[in-house]
Length: 552
Ligand code: NAD
Image (cartoon, rainbow, N blue to C red; front, side):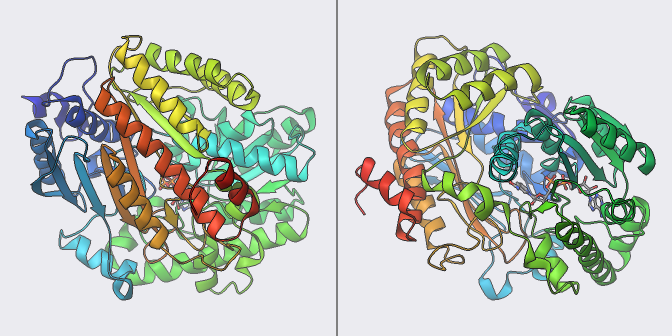
């Protein structure tokens, strides 16, 4: 009956309200968040169980999903469910403060860690691609990335444009699950925005959720709208249907040089993500199915061409950065030798935040009631009255961000702040100020949870970019601390072979057990980020570590 109501393929919906379906909130929470990941308002393609990021799935196939749901419905509070690449593989006896779900997605022994081997296994039904928050059940729609993208554009504005993005044009490619946050983030930061996507359906989705203001398939129209808005200093966003390489070529020919240039096409996956230049969506689907080798070769070549135009724009004055999709690496493989001449966004703008243990703290109201999120917003504004940036964000988010699926919120908080926020939320649940428990999680893109040499750990001070011991320590720390579900993934963001990362979600259900787990996990998790950066020699992290008495 539950499956019929909430998980009738491909119509997925998280239950709402405060009635339990599982045996406790510890198992109801992952159950709701898994279904929420697949809700049509949240996921990019529920029919394929694809949540976001190219092929990032929440479960391996519909049967495996059904089994996970069955397990969660019957799981006791002294048991843990094991999930291997989106399939339930066993239940083990543990204890009430241990995680209820232990997840490992897409991991391969390094020598085999490439798309070719992964795709072979995937075809045989042995694996799935978990991306970051898709397979770890804490994707919250485009809002999840919105604040990080906003922080990045704001940081870029501070670094290069005296903190003011008015009369500045941002150009980018890719308006999918994550990339779709770019238009709203850019306009929130005050810029004019032009984004290009091959797939009109993706842009339409951003229009419907109010992430983008206007849409056209005419290059000339988009260009004129953008130039006009930029001149008037209007923070509006335009979505243009087309190939991003082609559009950059035309902009260069017209001498339209944006102040800021980046990209979020799903370049991390040259076969199932990036669409080669000159192909319609249908032609690309056909070629992919018939001859994936040729597809990949064309894809790499197109990325090289695309990055070639980006380099030319950089030469002509655009502040250009890679936005975490491994575009530079695949462009290099496609023949663009200078692909790494522009930086990644982490060393350029985000690392100083990581040194303070700051990262994308997020939470969802399991009640399904938006009022619960507004209550948490208010509580945070009262708890951090001096953090004007945070308060501004929370106010703007309430006004301009449409919820997708279960109501949720994100804001970047650091060491100390996360624990404080978590304990406040637990208190709100305990005292009945919110109608049901709240789950707290984060992206795997965080200060201490990821090793990704072309992204989060690019250019580390001590050269330890590729060391993934830290990621495993983060996972072990959060598991020991009592997160409600934990995950270890490979290949998120930048693709197979290029990253390893850990996720965690911890439940605030108003109990004493939750208080203990929150207190530990929300300290351990950001502390791992500070320790990792202090160890690499970053002074701010060393200071932060002294401030919090972390024993280094
Ligand atoms: P997605 O698959 O949902 O969307 C990608 C979009 O790119 C699609 O809409 C597709 O139509 C478009 N596209 C592909 N080739 C194109 C081309 N040649 N021209 C124009 N459009 C093209 O992926 P997503 O979730 O939006 O993620 C985008 C990328 O960003 C991924 O590589 C992902 O790993 C990365 N990412 C970055 C961050 C970050 O913090 N910077 C976070 C998560 C993901």
